[in-house]
Length: 640
Picture (cartoon, rainbow, N blue to C red):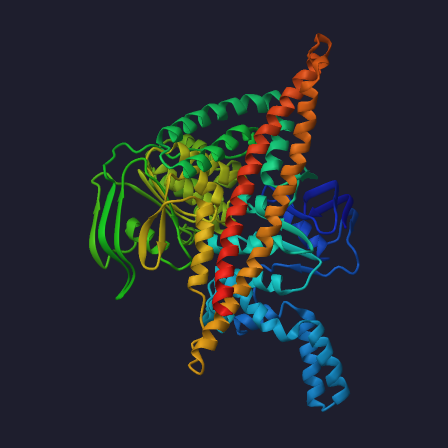
């Protein structure tokens, strides 16, 4: 197990932890959350032995193998697949020893090192590394390219693959989803669910945390508080604790008033049952849990546009791409005020290409694109963070686009994005990625846009800022088109989805669970097939067997998840039976037992709500499992 006892940790003049306590048992999967600068990454460095406690103890089993996701890459000349294989140090040592024995023509040593290589699964290592890379979005051609050929985000994917390649008892992952698209995140979720070691995960993606972890370790006020369950359970528990404070309660009421307005708007527009249900649940959960975020430093809105056009933008029969190469064909899209659209699609299918054309960074190769007379676009993309003036402060950035506005008004506005005090006047040169993203969003919000085009806006943002952005988007009266791997943001702020795939942009009639199922089918349909002409029938059957095997591996975590949900539902039914037995006892209706009766009724209501949630989740899990099993059966029948 991991044990932190009376732990005090300091970096320079800043004390991060003081007399902190934490116990994690082997096999636990815990999300480590807390404000930026709270000490999460320093805690990882402590567990890797790179830091020592200022006082207290950090105790880990001496024989544990620790794997972690590195934040930098130095060996740019290595091939991508070799770089991933380098994560398995035992494998590399066995390969090196065997090569030396072969060079020395030492038969006895060769036999011994062949056995060690076999024990390290060395003969399947290359295939396993390529499978990891494929899951994270790399093509076969990219796997054999040099590391230096890739951009920073793709290098982070290589670091993640290297960490997953390393056999480990403890896996430390620091923001693994920051540079992943939704497809890769769904794949990583399944991989981590089947991971048998102890996992400690820093993430700002609440849906990812809910899917993967069974505990939340919250770093707050130099202490670590451990909560059971995922992020949603943490929010409930923390909300209950904070709601006991009058100040927290008062602020919660204000937030609830806002949320009631949003729920009413979505209710009125709910034309698609499944999407409406998903969206309503997300909003109701946010309303219920708002007290968990009463101490958020963020509070902002997108300023309303003075004029508006309808439609804001109209594209028809458009051909989109670069130079002579078309990425999307026959695109038809009209955006009107109030539209809320999420873009879905595999990596590289053209989502960013579409947004760049709508934003005016690219022009259609052919077709028609008409912009409304009063159209004002607020466009957010990652490359815009690099276009900020590194020598200018947040205040100066805003003063440049609002030269006649009172300085105090600008300071107050930036305060909603947590730029306060000296930070307001500091140059952005040394700002973190999250701070630059907040500043870019602040500049967009000030500009009174009536169309927001957001390409992965939550990269680098912490959980509190993501929640503030979600609430600001819900209040925004213009149109929103967003690409995001943050499923909570998509569920909470979009009414409709467009699917970008196979060179087309089409309406997607379903929710994100339907999209996850669509992705499974898409990957199977687009799996590479060996076209060796020697024996086509044999080759086809081999490819089908490989696809069936790949699908079988995907089935395991889904089966475990369905079984766990069924067990949880059984446990809940037992609790509900006990409560209802108490309600059936006539003595509990006596005046002397009114407090007990009230508690029983409250417990019954909570359990009924949880029962409905669990049953729906369980049924969805069973539907997905049945779909995968039927697909596997078809493939196995074809390959036999």
